[in-house]
Length: 218
Image (cartoon, rainbow, N blue to C red):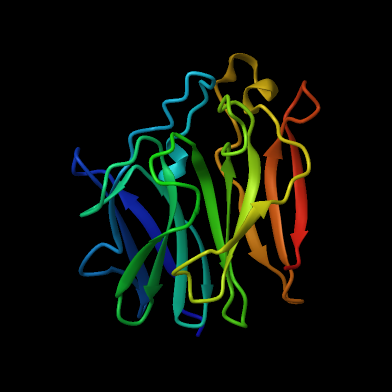
């Protein structure tokens, strides 16, 4: 409807992170009465990597009509179980009422010590919701990642179809001296033609960090 919405994290409480929605109303930004998500993030804690990963808690959002979809990584959702390594979650937010629900996106076993990070969400006009993220579930040594995309046809409640869209797993530490930095953000957007476009950082050449993109047509 032409109304801007911003989603942001608040770190005022040292024990939890809260995600909020702010909406532009009559020229003023108005923050919702309650957070859309409350969660804990304990870091990737992967001895194979050393890059900054705290950007994983930032919401990567898309919107369709009056519903916003914000993907982020968390070790625990308020009221839920604590996981050994972060999973990707999706906050589904009614931008008119502020009501929200949270769903786990990656469908590998809970607490399996795999890492899921730097997520982004988008939605089609048809109602299909897509989330993209880095994932090391297919590497027994938890070193190489793939860029995964998951698709939901029930409004973001479940993502039964998810797979790597890049064709070569890669070690994120290769592309930056000392492994101090790796991307920080990916992006997933829906084009006017209805095709979902993914963009991510990739170090498959073994020497540098490059940008790759891939249309997701399923």
